Image (cartoon, rainbow, N blue to C red; front, side, top):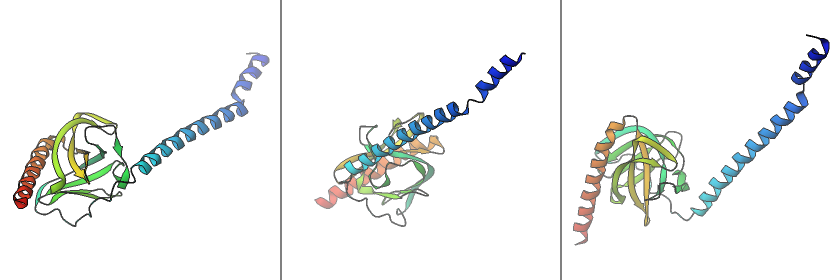
Length: 187
């Protein structure tokens, strides 16, 4: 290789100002995209600020019917699996321990806000393939509940997805039993 070719090869490798300029430009674009995503999340939180606080989390959920652990994937308005609810910490994905008791559903999320769904607010459960931008072909457990007149869906994926069927049945039985008790008390 002659000296002219070698000098030309070295010039390509040592064009540091060009590489640094492109790197800084890319970092600025990534930072701008992240900032816009964060602004969108905050705007959604502002729009949903009228949602009343969730019920206080009890120490226990009553006599335990079922327990499992897995992932919490988010809460949406019922029937609209893309309309994520971010108010009161319901929008963040996290690990979760679920306890279904006679008094309701206790969702304990290490490192995030726990929440409680009283039995009288549960309306049912089903398995589905997606919620809040998360699609899982083998299924999610989606619990439907009401909060201050709004119907919501919360999505979970148990560490052992074969448990979902038992959860769907148990939540349906608890919701039916609670509804019957409420109707009898009203008469």
